[in-house]
Length: 123
View 1 (cartoon, rainbow, N blue to C red):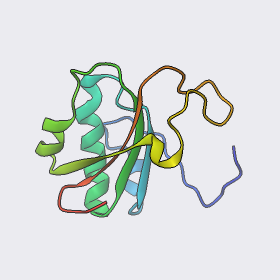
View 2: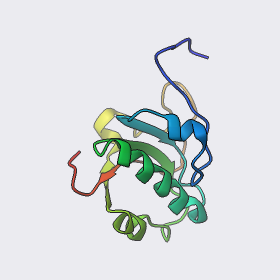
View 3: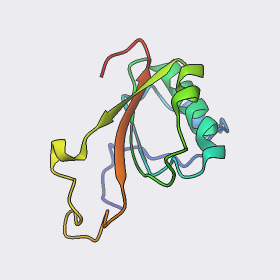
């Protein structure tokens, strides 16, 4: 939609290895907005990211998500898949306000940003 021919976008279903996903060349960055929505999907998301990390071990998943429950955690799954997560404070890039870019987002919701990579890599 933004007329960016150099940006390749592939639709996918977390946890399913489609032909489009298999055909992707190694990626440097994976952008994933609000994908950690339902805990039953967390492992499928990390499984797919792990597959992409096998193609390029230095790839990073950058994601924002709305905190929906303090009881939900990625910690055990990150350990299982040999990954780590670094929290990026929103105030570090002036995104900790109730309205960003003249929108109503994030409003009064708690939004977090994180970067996931292999545990042996450094962000």
